Image 1: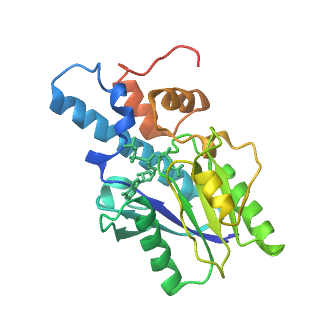
Image 2: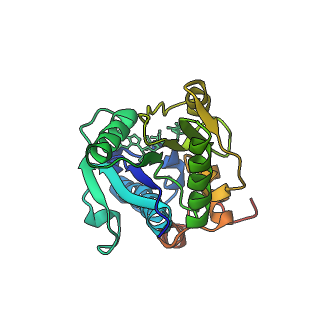
Length: 229
Ligand SMILES: Nc1nc2c(ncn2[C@@H]2O[C@H](COP(=O)(O)OP(=O)(O)OP(=O)(O)O)[C@@H](O)[C@H]2O)c(=O)[nH]1
Ligand SMILES: C=C(OP(=O)(O)O)C(=O)O
């Protein structure tokens, strides 16, 4: 196996996650509790598909999830991964916790991957990680993959000798580049396809999502346009 990079995936507490996706469940039948349940199920489906694709990537070594959710909820029992408890400090703090956990016991390059990439394909992640490792060989300290809009970050990779220094949040792609990360080019629509809004979910469906998100949309069609993107 061509292992090169250890991965941190932050997964927010499901009942607080993906608030911008509320319109996807607003028209569903039932009461508020039913819609909240469907909203949590959608956030979980996005994370499960992301984690399954990441686990299938050949270049991913250890995979650490930082979350308050249970490991069993987040995927198949057979998927090897470690879980670090989120201490409630927010997204960048969660990534710091995961990276520190990895670096205490390892010396590989470390990356942070967002957990809302339901159309991610393992080959895309492998290509991006290979691109980052090639850059490190030329002296770069970090590499970044911007989201489909070009403003956010879906993947941040740090060379073995450098701290990860996550600056996730609005405008994070530019913040990571300002901090020395090199932006990776690549035709990786699934890797760049973070799902924050119903429009993003429609785009991801057109690319083809993993089974958890496909199952959610099949069972909860209201609020998710089914026409051409
Ligand atoms: N562990 C952890 N993960 C987080 C936290 N905040 C965001 N994330 C994760 O970071 C990634 C990107 O998060 P956002 O798109 O900002 O997600 P969000 O806060 O759930 O979405 P909105 O409520 O719509 O802003 C997703 O994988 C989230 O699960 C946090 O406080 N802790
Ligand atoms: C947290 C980020 O983005 P979003 O909230 O748009 O997913 C980011 O891109 O750094």
